[in-house]
Every structure is written in structure tokens, then in C-alpha cells.
Image 1 (spheres, rainbow, N blue to C red):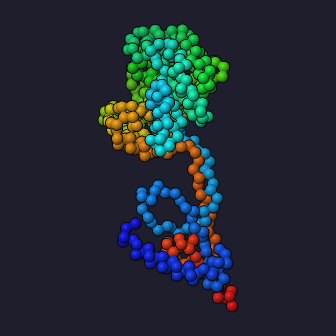
Image 2: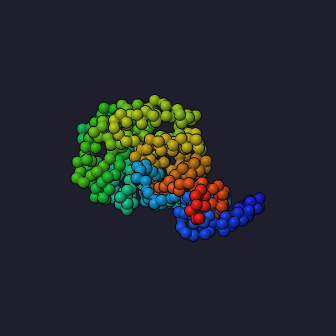
Image 3: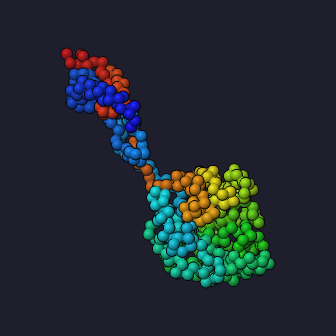
Length: 413
């Protein structure tokens, strides 16, 4: 409090004392009526409200209450989208979830996200040592979600030629690789994570992965359907399959790769702040961009997700971060996980301090728990009673507004 505020507060305290002396007898008989002075209390004082800290919050005169604060009523639990981050492949990624939560002021990170290595079939089958830590984390709470990116082919990042990809997709569509995906499904059920979200063959519309769609879209779709059917045939499974292209057209339009509503549970999108110079509005409006993704999912009756998103070609772009977070708040994906390493990230990457500050300010402390909301009760003013305007501080010390009854003289004759 500044020195300039002290004299004014002293005068208010004196006024308060004077009024209290004048009204004490009236208030002593109860909150409703004044026996002698005709003073009635209109509203009770507000309950104390916690603040950030005395050092952070400047002192100010409390506002006089105009309504009684009644019983606290919890809002109905809202469907707050689950969120998390990709933090590392293995056990370190699990450990870092708690660390990121602390950095975000205790925010509830309900999504764990990792990728199966696509180098060989034995890893695509999900070795127990790799999946165990993630399964343990998922089972600790019923409301957590485990997202697992699953390659559709081995040698997934070996730049296999289009001709060989075409051949492999056709073999997969004919059932040559069914046993690998059955083994994965059985392993996930054994680990007691049968409700894993499977981001199968992600970014299929690009040119990076061997499991890309472009060389033969029809064979790709048949192969996807074969994998899903195989994994769903395993007893005890509750998998959800997430069809997740790159934002934009990329190598082929992602709509040409869509395998059908029967085998897709979620329509996702991997979206990064690229290409260089493209604004967020352009990312929304471009062909096969953010708006088309939302519209396509709605037309197919499917929820959306953002398994990968973050910064990229435009550097530390706080505007992108604000807009993307607002976009997800508006369209409520089933989940989102920011890719948290350089150049994309906000916590493990020191290259993006402005975007990091935006991310932290928006998501800090965010949970899906219902927030208590005070139930307002309209104040009751007795008849023939005129409210007195005594100022904020006086009313605060008195415990509410007072009013003067017009009939006090006749009531006490």
C-alpha cells in the first residue's frame, strides 16, 4: 500500500467506528431489524477469497456485497480435452510427464504418448520392456489415455522406393503381416492397456515413411482395414484407431487415403507451424488444412485429435501458439500432445521462450475437475427501507449494506 492511500483509509476507519457506535444496538437484536435506529442489514459479508499472494496483489477496498453467497454448487463436469506432450520414447518420457506437470503448476497431463520403433517387425510387435513403463503409468488412473503410434511396415524410415512400397502395401492387404499386429494387440491386452489409442500409419499422405499411402492408395486402405480387423479380433481389446495425416495436401490429398468409417474411431491431424511465412489463418484455410479437417471429421461423425503439433519453420512464434491453443479450446479434440523437443517444443527446448510463456500461461494449473461456483442469492430488502450508501470500507467493516426503515419512529413509540 502506498503512503498516499493511508490517510484516506484512516478517515474511512473513523467513519466506520462512528456508524458502528450508532448502529450497534440495532444490529445486536439480529440481522433483520433495528429496534431503535431503524437500521437493517441487507446483505452478509462475502467469504474470504484466496489470492495469489500479498506481494503480488495490490491492496484494494473490498467491494460491498449485494448478495448473500449461498451454498457452493459444483458445475456439472465438463468434457475438458485431455492433453499431454511427447517427451521421450521410453521410461524417461514417462518420468517427464510429472516434471512437465510441475512446470505447469500442477496441470493434469492425462495423455502419455510414444512411438513403436519401425526398424524391424519384432519392435513393431511391441517388446514388453519397451511398453511396460507406459502401461504402468496408464493403469495408475482410470482417466488417463495412452496413445501409441504404430508403424504399418518395418524399415519405416529407410527411404524405401515407391515401387517397393507398392509391393509391400499389396502384400499387407493380402494378409502377409497380420501376425505381427495380432502379436501387438495381444501384448497390449496382456499389459492391461486394452483401450490404447492406436495412431496407425501416421502421416501417410507424406513422403517420409515406408508406410506412406501415395504409391498405392487403394492397397493402403485395404491394408489399414486388415490391420484394424486383426487387432480388433483379439479378445479383451478396446482399441481406438486414429487416422492421422499431415496438415495440408503434402504428397497426396489425405482424403484419398481415408479407409472408411468402420475402421476409424478418431480423425487426427499432425500440424506444425510451417511452411515458412504461412500465417495461422492460412493454415486454417488451405486445402486439406485445419478447417477441412474439422469439417471432414464432422461429416463422418468422428471426433478429432492432434497427436503431433508445435513450432517449426517460423521459429519462436507466440502468435501461432496462442492461436493453436485457442483453436483446440474451440474444437475440443479428444486429446492433443505437443511435440516437446527442439525446434518444436516449449519445455525441453530453450529456443522458444515467447511461445513457451504463452503455452505455460494458458495451460498452467489446467485440470478437468469441476470448479466450485458460488450460488448467488438475491438480497431481501425489507419494505419501507431505504439503503444507505456508506462507502466500500464502512460496509466491509459493518458486514454488509444497511438500510434505514421509514417506520422506525412509529414502531418505537
